[in-house]
Image (tube, rainbow, N blue to C red; front, side):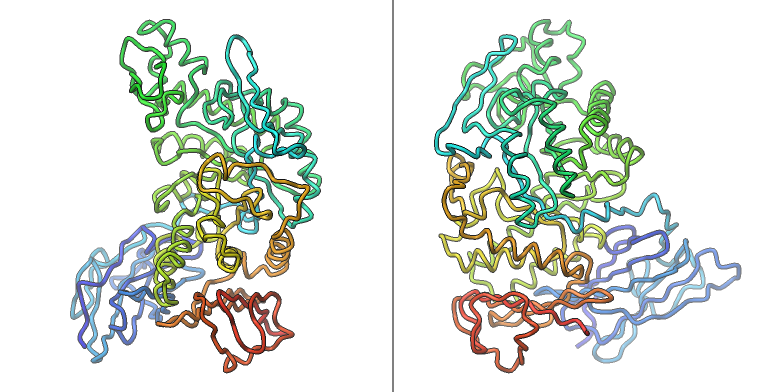
Length: 576
């Protein structure tokens, strides 16, 4: 079989050619599935002081495959800062092709400018998220729902402050969170991620009125200080949700425009306003201004306005200095212009490089994951892949194909910092999406805990809270009943804590085919963790795998060499 030239893909300065650090370069290439015998990367110093560049030739490694393509990679350590390179592809009939400048050649050009280049491996351009984040295990809290006592009794308070209504629903507070920090720590979490906590009209607090003040129904500024101090004393990081794409109706700038119309000095603080400006009385009325979706209570900010950038720059410095916040989850971040995020990133990283910036992005986040914008993004793609596994009864080969696409879609540093989850305050509870199938629930979370990336577990998954509709999936935990999966999450957190390979190691798929048996490993320099999954409801005899029971650190539905429905085995395969 000759080379399928149309399948070849390499894109310079992308997820196919990027720096891991200022001395390490990662080069990838895509080819048709099972269509090549070998691929060699030939690289040299672009500024080599001679007429001809001296090239180093290395065989590339196949790192993963999907249903259509194989992906090859070579990581060049201690490399030149300026790199010129080309590919040497050997097909199954031993024909050799030289690939550069997005074309195929029979020989190598003597002109180095004809070849692929990585112009300069600058340390400023290499995106390196805070190292602590790849080991982060967050307990995600929707504040109003985190009510400890009388959790079934909804408060539905309406507080009138400066003539503006401030609402809650269930009645959770920051002090409720503080009082449960020891509990959260006991489950093995080392971070809390709080949905919005600043003064807003609605119970969800995504319609911000005052970005500089804790919502009075959630607590006070002093309560937030106490919460962060207590969390830090327990070595728990604190990340908070910020809503910078839009404000609320009674945010001072929007209120001024409503009152003064075209004469307001804040007209340009909002993305698009039609006059006369007014607040629609009903949800069905189309607002005369751009907003989040068509939600009238959330007018969209003009984040390209210099005054808006300055305002939120001051806010971030204030939050870091006063409350010692460790990071920010940035709501609706894919609807905000790049320059705004670039400006805030530069400000924050000069202040403290260890502060993490997480984008809320529901699609492929590659565009935003770089040194200029975000350290991380919510990994909705992984969530969809896992749900599709169960929805379509995928074989291990089909599931691995989805995972492979995710692996090559992102630069390596960001694979370790994507925020992985299955339930959020915006989505139905995963246990309900899985039709209360606890075996599927355990397998899904076992994969989350053994995959690359940080982890976010929504409050109440340990109960588990159920719900497809918002009023159900945002219920409070009933701490008076048995929390069925608390011990499971405690065990998963313990495994993640004890085996750094799960946070820093490579992901290598070992077995995937038309069956439901899926095997992969996570490997770093000192550890190897082997994971065996049964992706179906049928029993699988794995006698031939020679499982040593003393190596098993967790298993579910495994007995006498039979891996039953949606069974899981996690083994320590490290050399002692």
